[in-house]
Length: 456
Image 1 (cartoon, rainbow, N blue to C red):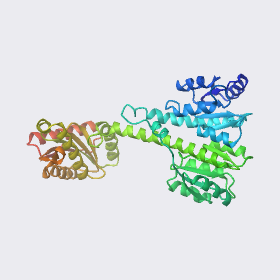
Image 2: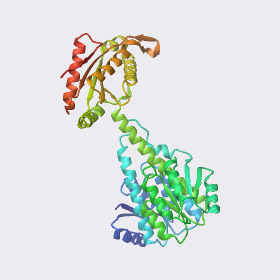
Image 3: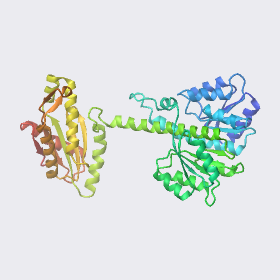
Image 4: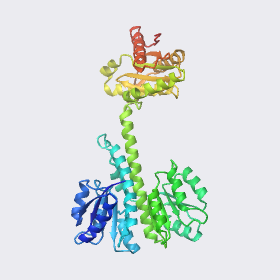
């Protein structure tokens, strides 16, 4: 996997060294020599990852990182701080500024490539989610990143897998102030609990007694329910090879023993914030999909959804020799409702009408608003006789109870005309709809407030 990497350093020799190493792994490298230049490049969307030197004149790396993470346009870009500072307090300061990872000078080449590859994979996932959710703003949905940035304190439910009592207790104590933490000493039980529990993150010790901690991380990544959850490895200083292997497997971050409490809290907070952002993007994308396929007035699926699903449902039923019936419903004299009582009243009638349809059809049936006052119900595994019975039930439910309008201050009678048609082995959705529509026309011309079946 390749990516465009921004290298920011005020020392040309340092830039050249990193550029050479990254080019050898086929990464595309662009450079900047100061903070404002780096910010401008990120704002234009010209990089996927930023390698940011801490010690720069004017605007140091901490300030640059903080500005990038505070801006909605650049907050999603992974930032790796490259620094000669190796004290926990310095790492905590960088994490609090929003840094995603650290490299200590002199930079280890294997660690450099592993971190860049790991963050490249993350960036690809986030970019795909951001692209799919790009229509959210135009649909009036709030920017998911703005919501995460404005969240004052992110709390999570964390599963710690550590069989050392003293170590496990210290980690639980360090994180319990902000999060709910559950500790598990058995890796097998941890895998089961992780899949069944509603956790936000895993913290896994690589020093488990009789089990390979990396295997557990890999198993978490292989399960559908835990695949997207962040994992933080707890490693020994000499575990370099395991850490690099873990990053290749998709583990998000690591911390080495002896654990600095503040650094642990900051790294967990960073991973949970990133998870919240990804979750918000997925929710935004789902909301966009629903807005595109659901009628906002009635809550039923719309015509687009109907047209994309009718063909597949019809094919599925006919392939196993079953029957599918289509019900087309049209509210009688609906124009008169709008003309007499106003469009607000008409909307109330449509919402109430949709509710009665959903209440009367079967759970397997698909009800949609086709447009205006016309509705369609797809009824899989329903013969003409079954469909007629369901349609009559709907018709009676509409006629028997007055429709409330004007916020319940008034009530008016409403009736509906219905046409139904059975597939009869024909795998043509357009023909089926025309037949049901023809039956609806006969209901209308025959006096309305009735059900008519097309005999083909």
